[in-house]
Each structure stands twice: as structure tokens, then as C-alpha cells.
Image (tube, rainbow, N blue to C red; front, side, top):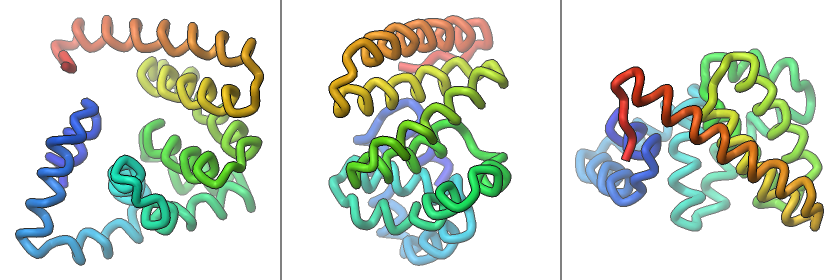
Length: 171
């Protein structure tokens, strides 16, 4: 599972699919499904890959619990997702986006962006800005698209500089 997560973190979906195939071959996919039901980070990771493969219903099934939680109580959602990355939160944004529920997606993406900014998570902030850019494009709010485009580029640039200074280089 760690190799699958690492492949997704660097955007290598080809390797992520290979890692998922290895899990299938090892017969550990059912174990993975059980683990994802209890772990929001794993649920988000597998959901991201499902969205990528066009298996939106499966992805939404993994995230539905967290989506309902956000709608019922953003504070409860934040507590449940506290130990996860911005990328995990953004998979729940994708849940709403994939259903055309753009206002809800926007609210959660803004919360994700704020959380990333508070923790100086430049990559998370950049990814949240990218999601906001996509949402506003769907809503035909092009000034907002442009603002979030610039924020995303700036965040990705800052993230890249931090990673190079830490010795971590993503390809």
C-alpha cells in the first residue's frame, strides 16, 4: 500500500495502477477494502485511483461516509480527517465535484486551502487552489479561475523550492 500511496503522491498513475495490480495478484485487495472503510487516508488514496480509472461510483462509495460527515458537521469532518493530508480532503471535494455539487465542493476546497495555509503546506494549498480553479471554471466564474490559477502556480513553486531544500525532489 505504501508504494501505491507514494506513486500517487508524485502523480505516477502508471506505477500506481501496477501497485494496485500487485495487490490484486497477492490477494490482498479484500483486506485493502476492509482497511479503507476504517481509514480515511486509505479511502482517499484508493478513491483517487478509482476516479482516475473512471470508476466514479466505486470512488464515491469509498468517500460517501466522509462526504456525509462534511455536510452534517464540518467540525466533525475536520476531527475525523485531522491526521490526513490536503490531498485526502480533496478527494472528498472530488466526490462532490463528480456529482455536480459545486457549491459544496467549493466550501470544502476553501476549508482545505485554509487548513493548508495555516500549516504552511504549500503543496496542499496549491492542490486546493487547483481544485477551486476547476470548480469556478464549471461555474463560469473566470476571474476566480484566474486568481486560483495564480495561487496554484505560486504554491507549486514554493512547494518545489521547499522539497529541493529538504532533499526531496519529485519528478
